[in-house]
View 1 (cartoon, rainbow, N blue to C red):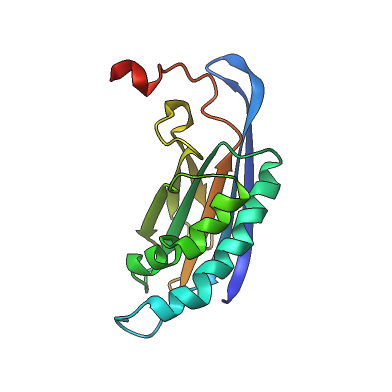
View 2: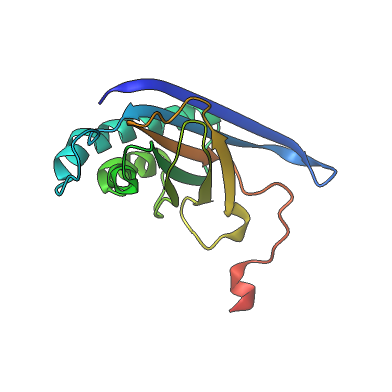
Length: 183
């Protein structure tokens, strides 16, 4: 796996809706800008060799890094794959939609739910929103949120941005009733 750079973003929300947040809400994102392993090969029928060669490695790199950046236990999480213009969305999906990638984050965060994801193709500097859900119960509404990311010089046409996001809690000042109240 050829990594051009790692980008870490941490946000701490201290006030929301004009009120101080009881406990600052932290969100961390760690993204690896990697060379697309299928770049320059034309249409690749079997993506499995590239998945086997890279998915676990990038998951093992990012999972501890995003939890370290968060500096608190994760309550919500998500993932992203943003493919440069010379690649296919399927290339990013191949790397993040496998247990070889996601299980690193699930184990590190003591999580059980599937990781929500965004995949898209775009030029360097494309904006993407990483969806986040609760780590053990995807129906907990307070943890349904997203985090906007932009890396000014990535992805290059032959790269993929692979990112993990973690939040220390749900949305600040959330006030929605539990889903069970509507069932």
